[in-house]
Image (cartoon, rainbow, N blue to C red; front, top):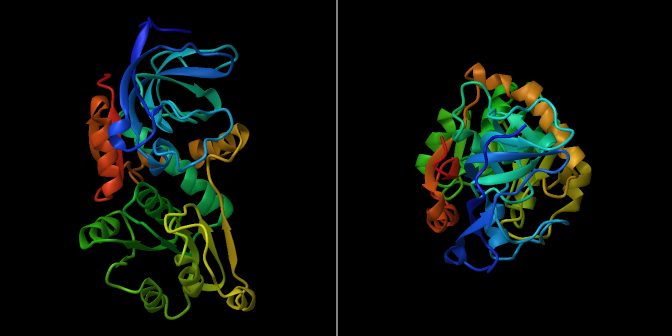
Length: 337
């Protein structure tokens, strides 16, 4: 099935590598979907820290991808489907997880990683969902085993990952503590449902966690900092607690006390979304569709979007992302309606 398609489209290319000003607005042919693929007319692309790491060449590209058109998630409408694709009709509002290519007016997506826009969510704002919801569901719930009655600490509570983790943990009955870097960010976390928000710039989060939990610690920690945070995370865990690491903002190497790990039966684990196979990602998406997407219609979840930038202001959007003053997500919009 197909809609009338233009011959060309605008994209933002990172083929030169470098800082935000190295991004190029270019014209490319509109691709056509192969078997199992969906061509999406893009409404918006979500920005992620991985985009910056790809742009400046500090993050290795997964097999089969290139440092060219950035973008790991989009929302929009089905424009055309390839052979073997069922259940997706032209014009249907969708969002999708990608390997690359989201910074453009059209993009190809694996049909198994395309989800309907949740009921009650604007198509443009749905671009804020795929990367964070896939990541949080895979790590907090599938890997970390978070369940009702547990207490979780979420670092970076005002980030795209953080605002998603707060809402999901709360929706599934957990007590939620988080860290953030300013009073305004802490207030935003509380409004989203966090039970306590710790300003890590002027408070020791370990001491605050112990005060909030009566000295017991938390059952689970979602961490994207690593480095020196690892030992402090272990100090903040309850007996048999788990820290799930999803980022390395402070570095890949550190020292920590293995003795505490053993005597308190603690677990250190982690994962990246990029390293998963399409089938593994599709399994995450299937659970999101059944377990999580209905919560939007119930008003228990919402996309959190700080700002929307037109495609030709991608450099400004990247600068804002690197400055880190935003709460939730930043989007690039294509002007599509």
